[in-house]
Image (cartoon, rainbow over all chains, first blue to last red; front, top):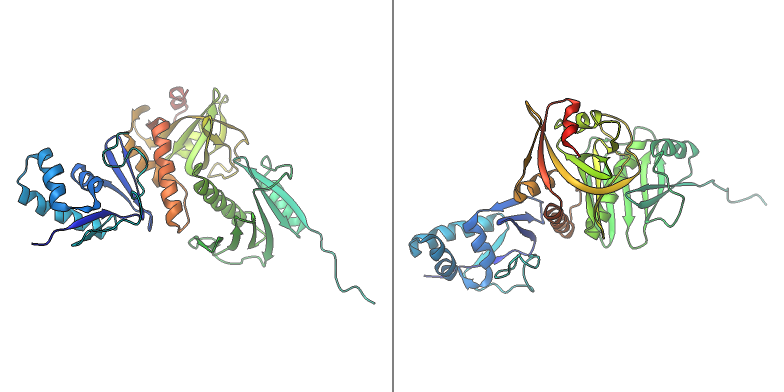
Length: 113
Length: 272
């Protein structure tokens, strides 16, 4: 079974405000609000970590869910985010152009604001 | 030998909004007088202009002012288009050209767009669909879409409040914090704001209801509603991102509340 890789799209701007992740498309100015699960996936979407690992390490401990069911939901969510141009998905690792995708300091994975 | 050239008078005036002087050059004296009346109170002294436009006047009735605005950038040159005007502007040379008929509305739109572009590029603020006023040395913004109550709250303002605008507020981030400037951009009240500024104390999101009350608004919701009221026209990815971050920054520093009010002057008892 192939693995899915997910990377934040560099053409969006994102900011976490009081725990709520807001994302704006640079292309058409559409504003999105991510729920908690989508935010976890977004923050971990570095293009190098397979989605199943993200689910196993970040989603399952948070929600105490079955890994296979959680992965299925996460794949559906990733493809939905990709349909809005928020992330890119691929069956191969995605090489970032450079650095983090439009995340200001403090919103990068592992950092606290 | 007859003269091959004719001297043409060139008139100019400087319109200063939000502390940014924009010089306008025209060969039409009547148009100049029209602008002097339109921007009375916002005329600068002709110092170094941040932007300078030559205005080329066309026949009256040129184009449709209700048409969509299109703002695009190519090779460092901005093109601003609506049915009733076409303008070009090069930030590098600080110069531009406007083609429109002799009316104050077209150049008004060009000025608004240019200010939004400069503020976005500098990440230093934005124009907002909001009334604003100064009271006790502090500026208050009242944001909302058409019909939310911007004109009503402006009309109800007490004598000790200085109206900055009843329609489009000018928000700028300075070293000392966020400041609201008066603007000549008017709504139904058709009254120019005062050309003064003050530090912003609070942003109110307007709603009309059965009683006057103020409620807190969570940051995410505040940002969404703020962005819905920010004036932005450019088809430009970088500026969209900068404007988004400017709005987020504003919400993280300025308190945002929901102001529900009945159309009665007592609502201003809550604003201080």
